[in-house]
Length: 546
Image 1: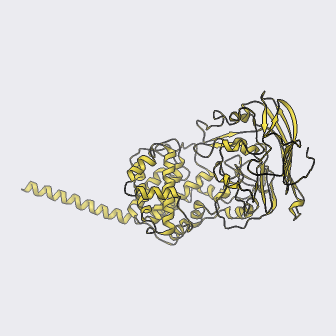
Image 2 (image 1 turned 30 degrees about the horizontal axis):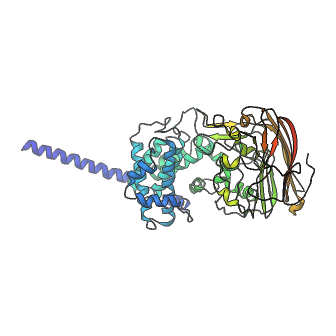
Image 3 (image 1 turned 45 degrees about the vertical axis):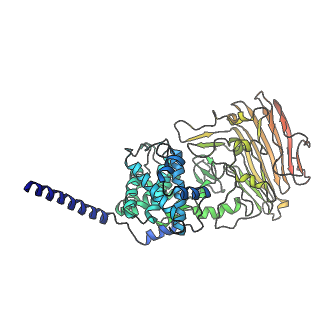
């Protein structure tokens, strides 16, 4: 009996000790609440957030059976990076709707998000990953950016301190230091990637470990990030990520792109500023976006706002866009011509700037010639503009005006054995050679668009797009309010005939011709050297371009 009593006593002592530890842990992980956390919550709240129809249907269908959702719709989410990305973005979409509208608006959403967060947390908790090794799959980005974003959204709006703290522990495992996350220590994250993951770590530490937060913001890497995010225009013309005095912009080390402007007032920008830090994004966006984008024609330049084939932007900016004007950024060879009715983008090839870039696990892999050659003029009254709401792929791209492809084997210009991800490196760049180009405008101070003119010369060889064979291209062109006129000289050493798309199959221009002929569906460019003149105009006009 005494032995039994001692056993009961020991068991009771253990239970009491566990209770004490549990209470201590609850007190220890009490979520921080102050003026800054209120600002962070406000920054996370986007009132006009909507849920994609597909995501709504999935949430309603699987609210009571998340296991089926994970094993069917998002199968391999715990072994494949792409599936993990899809699952995380699905949950983020639902969570941001809950933040904007409240849990009671559509109760299934929060229930689904909570179960997904628990599943992610449990899966990560059971994985023996390190700060240099990803838990599963082949890409660090879904973990360091998407999963951690979902976790901090839940921490600040999930009303579950204990689960929020469990998320915190996994965030700190995924991002153990500023700049260090799931890849070799010799390759710390920098610039934009550093920005994305740092916001998650700072938010989590601010709520659950303020002492570590204070240490984080004193680190050298964070100080470098703060300086980078000021985006001070550069005076030199050495290719480097950021903005330039002539309004050019380089992204991802050597890509001519305004993708940095997409950060303006987005999730990470808002939350970073809510923490009390500043960026130069607002100034850059206010200066550049009204010049580049059109108030009524929602097209964006292919390759200049990201790696996908999305040509129509649905995003609403709190800015007023100019409806007319010419904008040029000479260093990167970019030009915009817009009137009330038309919008045209061009980028000529420039030294030390890639023609095309692929990122592992992101964007399209079949748009190389589109980045370089597409000469689409978007028209306000184009009844086919809806076509471009779908993501551009090679099948659509190969028919676009301006493209020069193999006459009989167009697919060879988009060889997947050439345009593919690098096996080791995150980025794979493809370069033009023998580049000789410039871009400019006439009558810069003129207010009437009928008197203004955008012009350029674009001379280059893009071996990768022509099966590593020599095709030397020289394009001299002008764009006016009436359309485009161009002179081409092609030295075709590919031993195959080429085809030049001189017609826009989606818009009926009054004049679409090569050498004043329009009888053929495309212009055949023979082997060796040839010259021709292209016109795509609303009315007869001749600038004698040559």
